[in-house]
Amino acid sequence: MSAAPTTSALPKPAVPFIKIPEHGEPYLEGHRCAACKEVFMEPRRACPKCTKIGTLKAEKLANAGKLYNFTVVHRNFPGVKVPFISAIVDLDGGGTLKGNLVDIEPDIAKLRFDMPVKVVFRDAGRSDKAGNKYLAYFFIPA
Ligand SMILES: [Zn+2]
Image (cartoon, rainbow, N blue to C red):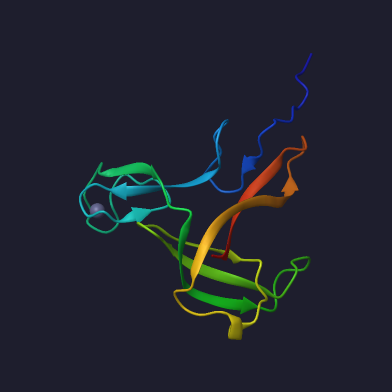
């Protein structure tokens, strides 16, 4: 007898650095170097900035930051709705990541460098074979 695929109550993270606690809100997890304080999204053995080994420790990152850079994407793979805003955000306290800025018209006249944004978690719009949903992160104007 084989086990049937099961759906979990919690969605799955769309990327490894989204953490979804059983109780509480989802959050982003980064890895801060104890020596130079730089934050990286992926775990690493050695710090890419100061090259020290074993100094990176996981920590919960802020859910707010500033829009470092952006572009309005008008052409993409078939099936991807355009236009949308691809953004790079510096999180408060450390950590930089790329994602989509939503809940604002994709018009460069409405965007400015360093505008405050918040991190939100929403359904990624896809599921696995067992029907489990994925949770993705997005940026919204603060
Ligand atoms: Zn370092």
